[in-house]
Image 1: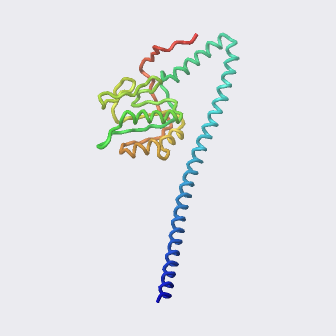
Image 2: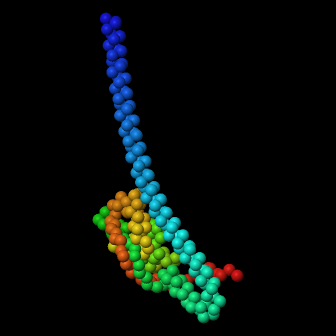
Image 3: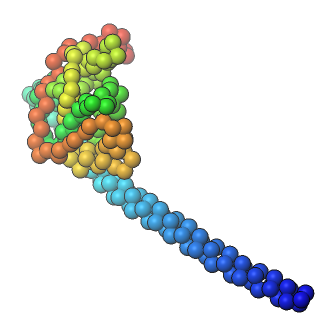
Length: 231
């Protein structure tokens, strides 16, 4: 009787051991599969990001070469008073364009944010979007045709009224940006990025990539009260 109990115990032990080994193997396989999937996903995203940054670097390098070439041209032209005057005129036009004092156009992206029955678009949604677009290389941005410049303030009054450049705006909020369409689109659509965040908060957002966008000039007055030229 004791012998049979020993054999039975051994048999049960062997079966339990086999089951444990099978379960361990299954768990290990699942774990490895998940890790492989995650690593593959990360590798794909990293490759995509690397390609994007490589393209940006090459573009920046071209711009640097162009800038160096312009510097050499300026040095040559400054030897002539007539050329120097023309050069200053060109620089003035470029400065106005950079500061937002001229109407501009070019390729880019148009993003529309809307209030819905559940959530309203907030000031920080607009600030965050402007920052994302700037980081992606946007050269000009406007919200409801209010041009975003260095001194632009996106303010909130009475917890409900949004002001841009001191002017009240209301939804739908149409944000237009001029720049490389690919970079601008990828900046907001990247996984876990701005688009996903807005949708996760049950807010409405749509966008279109445009071949030509028109942005109006800045209508305000740019005043510098505290900056002085260092002598």
